[in-house]
Amino acid sequence: MYINRDFFKTIKTDTQLEAAMVWGPRQVGKTTLLDRLDLNSRLFLDDLGARQSAQTDPAFVISTLKLPCLIDEAQYAPNLFPEIKRLIDQQRRDQLKQGSKPTTQFYLTGSNRTQLDKTVKESLAGRCHLYTLHGLSIKELQQAFGHLTIGDYFLKGGFPELYTRENLSPRQYLNDYITSFVEKDIAVSAGIEKIESFHKAIRLLATRTGQFLNVSELSKLVGVDQKTLDSWLTLLQKNSVIELLPTFATNLSKRIVKMKKLFFYDVGLCSRLQGFVEPDSIIHSPQAGSLFETLVFSELAKTRDNFLKDWQLHTWRTKEKNEIDFILETPTQTSLIEAKMGINNISDFQVDPEAKKVFRQDFKKIIVSAGGDIQKISNETTKVPIKKLADYLLEES
Image 1: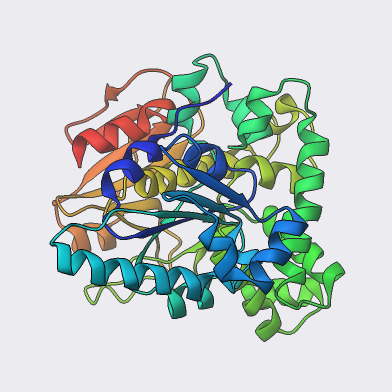
Image 2: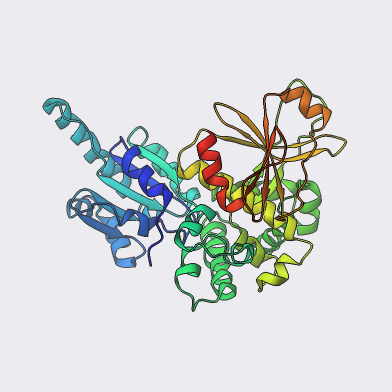
């Protein structure tokens, strides 16, 4: 079963350069999505033979491809990139003589941002669009299935195969994913030698999702210096495993703390790292609120990136510990967003004086609930169920 992706419409209409790189973690559906484009050839570099050929004789391999083409997991053959650059430059010279417009000829995927960044920036700067594809959003899952629960999201996250292949065990699938992608692809390729400490750090981070992160405290618990932990956090952010959401910065208030708030991009991965194996145990655990807030963050980030929206995400916390879960800035408005895992009897949230001083009255408030319908709570506050959050924000922006 193929699940329609919101990003598919974006990449069909947005690309204006000769190459398009779709980056994202493993198993989020990059290859499946691009394979639905009208392509003439495909090169899969997960295959060791194809990878070796592409590295040793990139010019020959490129010459065998009929354009437009797909090159999957391009980070495995960096020698291809200068050859792609040469071809694009030649096409540009030819098109200049003919007066024709460029079209996208190379669609590339990659799952290791650490390996890709330098290669793409050096070889394809100005020739390649860079996109990020995350796992399935709740919007996409609701459109495909409609009957899913919060427990399903907590257990399976946004991994397509866990929804299309009912025989798969989320526990085993995510255990394998942690070993293959997080520990091997990310850690080993970055040259991390303290794998056990790195693994410990990831699990401790999972227990802190939805919380303001004290890096100094965490480094002591992991048993590494803060500089090392900072480099690991940067690595995990670059590869879209976690995000450290900054607090909203302004000169109008000196009471705002600078500590960042931690979120995992995939709530299913986070739940598995916490040790959960059943949806009911997650929902009734003390971690449920933080995991729901993580789910809200994930939906905000996926909607932004799927539709290429110019949205800025921040959080808010004063020295008196007055907090706002999310501050979403669009070109037209500012929304203060609170995540409340419930459906009924949800009351309005108060905005502290420091926030009112910063935002004055030019903001709207949104409470994201686990279910129910869109409901006006007050003149400035709307309750929105998480399954309708993306559509609501897209209509408002």
